[in-house]
Length: 181
Image (cartoon, rainbow, N blue to C red; front, side, top):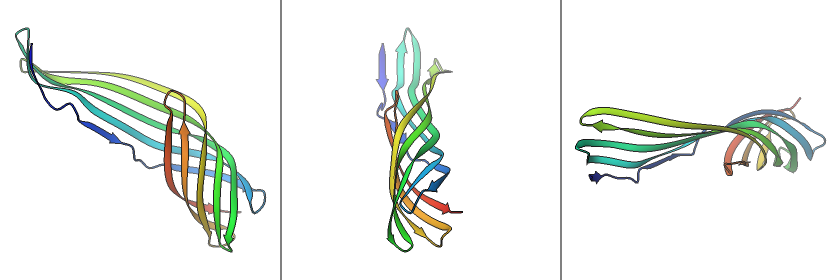
């Protein structure tokens, strides 16, 4: 067997996506409250070219092709936990949150091969999927400006942990629009 191997270092990672949430809560007093809601953490993916076969002679056949691997993941679920506020100014609060996130995380792994044998195109794919549920902690810190007694706008940094077979930490910068009844 004689083979001319091409570049095998092609790795592409897309780990930035849009996350969104919707929820509600209740402030027991000016400093302590509770929240519950739904959050979609978005999607991530990584793909790599494991092998590029520019030209090979195998048992008298001319073979070319690539072997690739793609991994995709997504997570969404429900959160619940306390909220802590520290008034800094009449209209500005520092905000902290800490709680539990019950997630459903889906992971898909695809191995793909494509190429030619004596000029005839051939391709094959194999995919494995796994979905798991897990309850893990989350926390967040930020600030909120209150336009009036009903409407506020905040900026927050949050970290979600996704456990189970995939132990991952997800960082989120978010804006939060609040309406109080």
